[in-house]
Length: 503
Ligand code: CA
Image 1 (cartoon, rainbow, N blue to C red):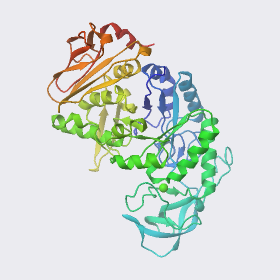
Image 2 (image 1 turned 180 degrees about the horizontal axis):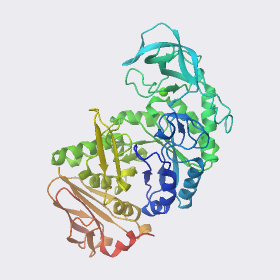
Image 3 (image 1 turned 30 degrees about the vertical axis):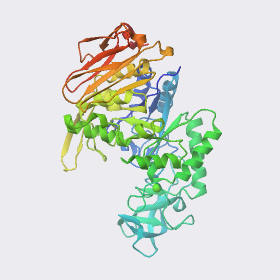
Image 4 (image 1 turned 30 degrees about the horizontal axis):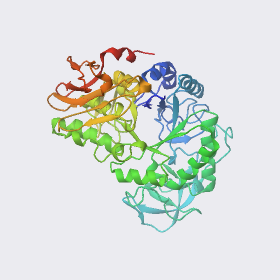
């Protein structure tokens, strides 16, 4: 039987630019597999317009994974190609998969300017044209002088982009829709924010150009076959036409025998929008459950004022659990970042219990919660702020509980505003390992919950050590499980605790 899936986001926004990330992954691979991770999501490995300072979301060359002298550096922020290859090898050696963070909506840092015909649009309603067609000079030509024709001889030019935001002729910043042969208007995308949300930033890729689609298929084959990634985290999917994903995924799935994993970032709190995208892409892309993240953020801000029975209301995990990737935090929601909405520290054990120990969703654990992080950056007030993100102490134990104990039917006791619980009753294949969880955002509590007759007469203890009591399971397979004030307790059979030790 396969273990429960779990993904680790192996970076945060402020990871140092010293080129050490891939080496760190190589060192950590055995430990991560032992904790029960099945997949590692790396930051975008492509060379960015910012050289070693680029986090990865402003890609310049998708074929330069730290191998060519471009943008002032051979390596990227995270290391060089050789170190990346070694990290991937280590991840595979320990039975895990590795996901490439594919930023396909845009390219940045073009090598040359071109004269292009555009119209200017209203930034708040991109369907409203506010100029006659005219010529500007746009950064749309990518010739990759440092790489030349190694791996690919494709030159990106003005026919490969639908929009830009800089006119170098008049030094003007605006949103310009490029008139090209593939459609006079923006591309049809899922998000209708700002009238049409095709354009996000930099040089926006034109998927209606068949040469672009062919190049991106060829590139993805190279990533999967030559670089040996196992799947993709797809950035900013709400700005990319869904027909492209259907064609691209259809092509790759046909081409490769191995199962390719696709998880998309569609950052929106309205679950209907997420479901519409999932339907439009034929259910082949898992999506991050942004609404659940937002519920967790609100719960952590509200203290005892949040009704815990509603924590899954309006979430993808509730309405479409097979397509949901759950997360507490990511590189955009962490403090001082674009979508800053950090889950308060006191609630992180609650949030991870809700992600890791339940049946629904595939959890994606955030780097800083496992390893901690410290950094300084400017806040919205223009002042420098120092941020220390402590690691979540009980996270490793919860991961081990997920790997060994979180199996079988799930009985929910979401019956009190401030205190909820559930049990997993185990499977024959997992030696009937079972668990019970009780969590509260106010006073402590007791919950009578069924954990199965297989466990009658057993003694259960809180493996997190938050509650010192012991729980006896009665002959019908029920126990009175506790948790302390504002706390989480995870109850396991005392006699099975040695299963949590490292393999
Ligand atoms: Ca776009």
